[in-house]
Each structure stands twice: as C-alpha cells, then as structure tokens.
Length: 323
Ligand SMILES: [Zn+2]
Image (cartoon, rainbow, N blue to C red):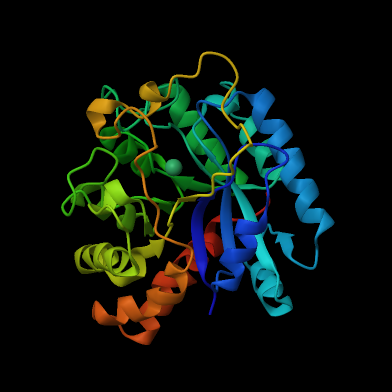
C-alpha cells in the first residue's frame, strides 16, 4: 500500500533543509510531490531551487529517490526510501512557451497547474476575474498532456478549471483543494468542479490547511470529513490527500526578489488577512492518524488504501509516460 502526499512545500531556496521529508517518510508517506515554484517566483529563482533540490536527492540515495514512474515509486517503497517528484504552481515559469513543460518534466516536475490564485496570460487564478482558459492556455494543456505530466487545477479559477478539464485528454487532479460546500472559501472547489474532475478519471486531494478546512487547528478528523464529502459526491475512487504542509525554516529567506506583495497573491478580501501568517497546517503526524479517521468516517480498508494513495497511483500510472 502506497501513501501519496500530493503536495508539500519546503523553502524555495537551494539550501532548504530536507529533514521535513524524513518526518513525512517516518509518518508513513511513500511518495511526496514537492513544490519548486509558484507564479510569484521568477525562473531565476526556480532553476537554482531545482538544482539544489536535485543535488540533495542525488546525494542521499539511502533516503530519497527522484522518480519518473509508478514502478519507481514501488521500488523506492520496497527499498525504504522516500519517492519524490516536483510540482510547479502556475504557468508564468513556462515563459509563454509550451515546450518548457517537457523541459521541466525532464528536471523532475511531475505535476503542474496553470495559475496561482491570480490571472496570467495562460489561465485564471481562483482569486481573480473569471475569463476562462486562454488560447495559449489550450496549447499549454496539450503540452502538459503530451509531456506525461499531471494536469492540476488547484489555485485555478472555477470557469477556467472547467475549461481545462474539458480540454485535457488525460485525467485531471486537484492536488490540494477542499469542498466549497463544506467551507465557503474562494480556494475551495464547487460540486460542479469535483464532478468534472471525477469525469476525467481524476482525483481531488483534500488539503490540511486551516482556512480551507474551516478550523483553526486542523486534525486528521477534519481531513477525513472533507474526504468523505468528496467520496459521497463522486465516489471514493476520486479522493486523495494533499495536506499542503508549508515547512518554513527560520533564517532561510525564500521570498521572491523585487517588489513581492503577499497581499496580491493572498488577498485580504479572499480571507487570508493579506499574508499566510495566520494559516495553520495539519501536522505531519496526521499521516499516522488518517487511516483511523477515515475508518471513523465510514470507509472500509480498501477505500482507505485508495484515498491514502491508491487513487493517485492509478492516475499517475495513466498519465506519467515518456513520449
Ligand atoms: Zn498551493
């Protein structure tokens, strides 16, 4: 049984401490998708982060393995090492060039969404004016499909996400998103979006972030409650886990260079208080408690195995291929 953590954030700095990944492994995680950049981060920041992270993984084969396939995840799990893939949050690092998707894939990026909270020339963010997927965005979806990268709609505008799911030839995921029906927050996803995701064969991975769960102290029970809602709506085979833990490290400045304005990316009026400072994450130990919490929510062992990783494994098995 593989436990799949669909999204985690280390400091976006080449020197980031990787010990949080060891804690995830100790809590039972077998694969983790680690963020390497968002729309607010210039390529001049993202490339050094990729280089630093890749070097760290290569330097510790006894702990980590950068994987490109489901088979490699199983091999890593058998060897007792953590399988790692990277994800990109937004299309600005693609510099308007669809061929960049395959380049990032070759560097280890296995999952990408096209906008981070705000609109860009490719797609809409969930905290901005709704336009829908742009013509360039359609080409980007085609490039993501062709490159064998997971198409992710987290942080994307409602209408634009529906456009992406209609345009994608492959299953689409929400790697970290919660049901709007349970918590009315602009980052959460509507029943219509959840149904559209399931119709692609995809998975909605529930996050462990306080404001999206509607609690100040997120627990495994909160995550299980949101997972059960998605399961009841579209079937348990479309539910996964992406706790979205942000492992901040004091003293390591990973802010984008220049005039970075947190209130633009996390608008006060959208319920963030103008920054992420008030956000709380479900603890790493949630992974130890999750099976019990999902059982309490009414799931049987096979369903729990699917939610904790089997469902994302199925989607990745279909999507990740090298042309
Ligand atoms: Zn995110």
